[in-house]
Length: 183
Image 1 (cartoon, rainbow, N blue to C red):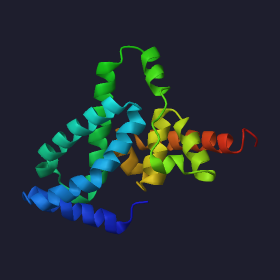
Image 2 (image 1 turned 120 degrees about the horizontal axis):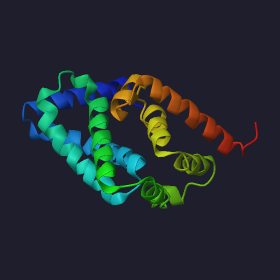
Image 3 (image 1 turned 180 degrees about the vertical axis):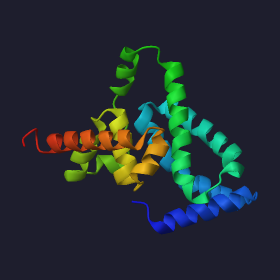
C-alpha cells in the first residue's frame, strides 16, 4: 500500500525532475518503471505489448512532466498514461475479440518469488490472474498499490463508479474462487 511518505517523495522527485535534475529523474524512473510495467502487464497480458506500452508511456511522462500541475498526482497521472498507451496498443494489435481472448489466455511467466510461494499467497495470485483484465487492474491498483477509488479511476481512465463496480465484481469472484465456490 502506498503511504503518505510515498506520495510526498514522488511529488518531490517529480518537482525536482521538472527542473532538469537528472538524479531525481533517474530515481523517479527507478521507482516507477517496475510499478508501471506490472500495471501494463495486468492490462495486456503480453510481454511485447507491456514493454512497448511502458516505453511509450515513459516518453509521454517525460514530455508531459513540465505541464503536471499537481506533483502529488504523479502516481495516478503516470498510471493513466500507461493505461491509455496499453489501450491504444491493444486496439492497434487486436482486430477482434477472439484474438484478445487468446492473448489473455496465454500463461503468465512466473518469477522466482512466485515459484517459491506456496499457500495462501499463491492461491490469491492464481485467483487474481483468473480475473478479467479490467477487474485485475482495478483490484491491483486499489488493494496492492493503495490508490484511492478516485486515483484508480484516473489511472484506468474510467469513471469512479466503474472502478467501484469492477472492485465489487472482482472481490466477489476472488471470494468465490478462494472459498471453492461455496458461500
